[in-house]
Length: 189
Ligand code: G4P
Image (cartoon, rainbow, N blue to C red; front, side):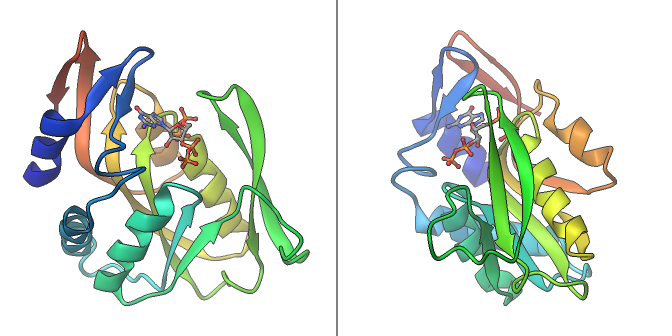
């Protein structure tokens, strides 16, 4: 998606450890117009696919999912990483290993919000190692629902995320696919 790739080239910063900083337009301050374009593009790519719900994971996925959902006219559910007192005890729960943090955490969704009739589109900002998506797929499968596919803003193709998610039989659509990220130089697929 040209507009996203151009924006990454203009405002993204390559940090040490293969991290792309996009917090001026995606995951701290965010550009609603850009997210609207992402929503239109994902709607186009998933035309003809049944989608009854969008599922993401807090924190950074929420804003993208909320805007994208307007093009699908379906509710957004986000998996919670922090189960506060008001978390429904009757929840699906999955483990997610975060490479960047070197730790495993739990993601949870109330059983009320995904059910076996749902066909769920997974949305996230980054696809790197694929662990966040694997956790979401696990939650959807526990609910007996179907995974319609995944919609990702930025995929890092030099990390194994796509492979592990596709091995689960899930379609992956990424709007900007980074092939290489070295010495502050980026190249897209
Ligand atoms: P995964 O997301 O594919 O599972 O891979 P990984 O375990 O490596 O990612 C852990 C966290 O780091 C995720 O966010 C992911 O979105 C983020 N991340 C991965 N690569 C990059 C990158 O190049 N740039 C930035 N900015 N983030 C990256 P998280 O910990 O769940 O954070 P948040 O959603 O709560 O903000």
